[in-house]
Amino acid sequence: MNDFWIILIGVLVACSCSLVGCFLVLRKMSMIGDAISHSVLPGIVIAFLMSGSRDSIVMMMGAAAIGLITVFLIQMFHHSGVPSDASIGVVFTALFTVGIVLISVYAGQVDLDLDCVLYGEIAYAPWNTLSIGGIESVPKAVWAVGSVFLFSLIVIGLFYKQFKICSFDPAMAAAVGIPVMLFHYLLMGLVSLTTVASFESVGAILVVGMIIIPAATAYLLTEKLSVMIGISMIIGVFSSVLGYYYAYLFDASIAGCMITVAGGFFLLALFFSPMHGIVLKAWKRKKVAAQA
Image (cartoon, rainbow, N blue to C red; front, side):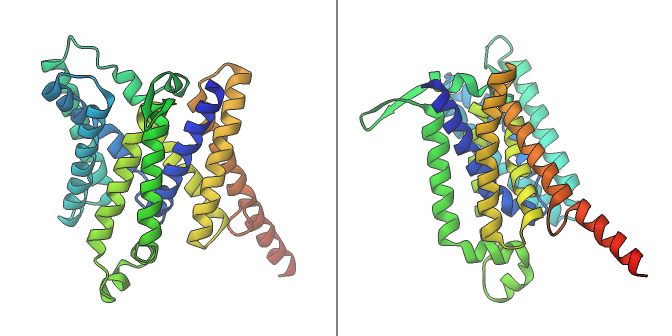
């Protein structure tokens, strides 16, 4: 039964991350997930200091709050003239080091299990269960990630056209009366929730892989956003299932194998994509040279 829960958690994380990841790839903001995954550390520590509890729900609330603050600071610095990549680097390193300082000063003797928070181990997720509405023995990660995934689907489904226009052409979106900044922060809020809900089971570092790699792979295979989202989710699902199989086969890290498989899919798309593949481009150049 644990095998089923591990694969299901991996699939839910992959689909959640792929959904928001497609919009981040289109906006050239892929590393915002990395920024959030690092900057949530002070939120976790502050939540612990205020509540005195290591309950994961309390810490997730603190992490989600800091995640939204991270997005706001990055946007503010960018609008002040700082390049986007520099804004991301400054904010997440500053907040991450604030978290480290808070731990060393106020919580140095307390086991906050930060290795689990930052790196995660999906193999342990099925043991941490939560009963809701009479449904018992369901891993907490399934409830958390599943709820966020459903919420993201509803929000993006309701405002798909607005999110699409804002991602492809923000100037046109503003011209037709769409509140671009509102949908920007709404998307970043979904990214923050997805990252925070996922990193406890898969690990914050590996969440970044699930946000970027399936979406980047799908980007190479299609030019239609709806198809891109579907392909990225399919790649995420296959990466989770095959990654678990290879982890079992080689007795390796489950989450690490899932990301490795996703990376393999990306390489296949990079070389053999019918539109952007390196092999196809080389063949076309050779064909043109032969005709010259």
